[in-house]
Image (cartoon, rainbow, N blue to C red; front, side, top):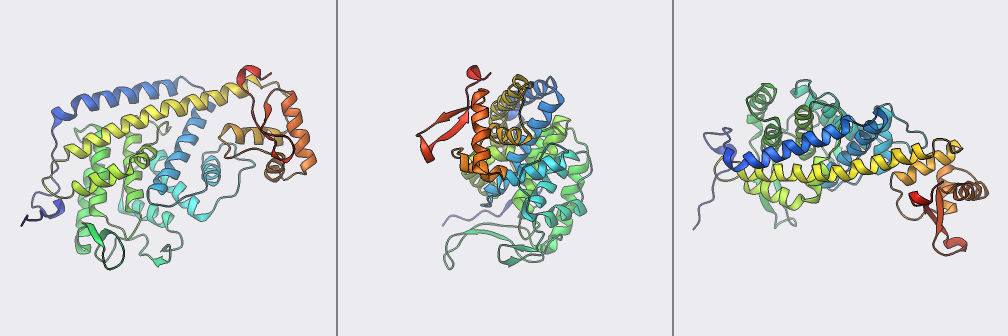
Length: 372
């Protein structure tokens, strides 16, 4: 019968992680080059474009980190909360809710205050922000403090659960977290991107809270990546890429918890995932530039504030079809006023008609070459 290996946090050499530098060298070099090239492109853009890129990236980060845990947040509310906190235009966007505010507050603290030390008190504040009502769903949580009971990651129906992982005992947490935080806050001769990958894994292994450990681990990684970039401006989303590869992410976290402390497989995947996140960011930056070019093209086009807000909604990626009745609801105006707004925007070459006539008529942004 095959003997089950202990969890790595039970090994006498824990947490002395090892890896094979030669196996990571070229991959790390490629990612760092890609990072530098993207940040260089960002630096060459105007302040408004950089701010919009940061807003779009952070919105994606908040949405996708929560989505990994099965929580779907309203995108417009997330964007509104971020825009308000970053001091950007947010007029016309819907009000936010407490769930959104908490996740946004944590993400902004991690990325905009990256150089501040990571402390237990700061992590407790993040945990409070994630669970402002003191519950996870229907279940009460110990909020803003290390857990006091055992922690298992399980799946499957009641009575037939499968245990994927068992975290360190509660009475070890204070010492475990002190060791982790001391390491994290101490300058090391270690590439900062590798440090982000190690910090993410180490924190998830300790699993110090009753809930929210995954989201906080990803926020810690984002904090360290902001340090690696040397800027609070964000132009790529690691959480969005992790969400796209979440099965591999979970599988690697699980398999790496047993066996030796060699984290080469985890570090390899993390670097590859970051590389793909940076590639996706090229597309995001192209969208941001397209929006900036649109407004530059129409800087002299007379538009009402209502028209400007709603065109911005279309540029941000409007879900579904835009109709006169939807326009009226969003703008809080009559259907006749919405119809006049749309007709005016068609005359100015900003919108075009699509779909059937009558009630089925919908509208979209006109291709750039036909805009006037």
